[in-house]
Length: 358
Image (cartoon, rainbow, N blue to C red):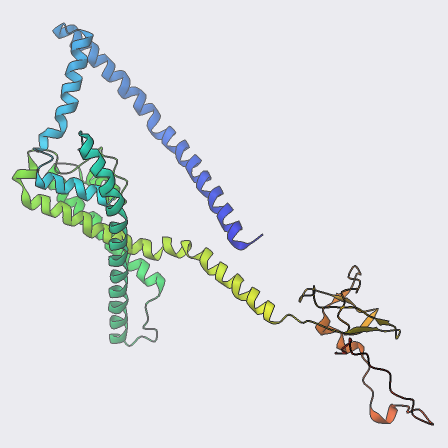
């Protein structure tokens, strides 16, 4: 089995194993808390309905009003500032879900906008990531040259360390700002920054969604957009070093296999003519029209191949390729040769349809 197929199967097995393991951990960590919250909410619902004598239908209407009015706390979501924020979440595939189009025209334009914008964004972030890696390698080379190090070139491990440090610094610095503006705890802010920059975008925590921030705090809106774009560029630099390296491994193996196949084909040998066996008999025919470098010859029966037929038996135990049978011809020094006495016999007849070659 090819190395590429083995790697693909291994990745499939590892991925599903990782999914099963994650499901088991999430079940153990969140299932009990979910059940407790549901019980508490149901008890509160019963208490409120009894206290204010609210019917089931009226309570459902109140729920709908509260849920639908939640996005409007940040102000108008579809003015230019909010629309730009929405377009950014679409192009970067974050997709918080804090605001969604409600008209058919808006939904149709979102699909067309995403079809063009998402590939454009991926290419842009990938290009920025490559430039960040190039700049990091230049800085590392300059620092090592100034320190008179023997090895001045930046290795992949060095670049991975640099982009990991930059990613961590971006997340930690952004978390401090979001913790101040949003009133979140620092850990929740770190969680929000990580979910955003990895483009997971659950939507459970979304910035710019209270105190009419989209229209009243333009500096905070600018900071949020710069954080998203710059942070995604740093993450793209990391992906350029980590993920793409594994993605291109199959391509490299395919090219290596093709090069080996071409080299093997170039070294293939074709033999035309008769086959002279060890006992002096001649096998006539054509060898080579169906022979490749894998064609083997019995070392006990055949010594020289000179015929164009494929009649050589290949089902013996010991096999050698046609290029390895010349050692069967004995090479004797001149003084050990016994020349025949008497008249020299005439040369054998040469048939025009046969060509003898070693």
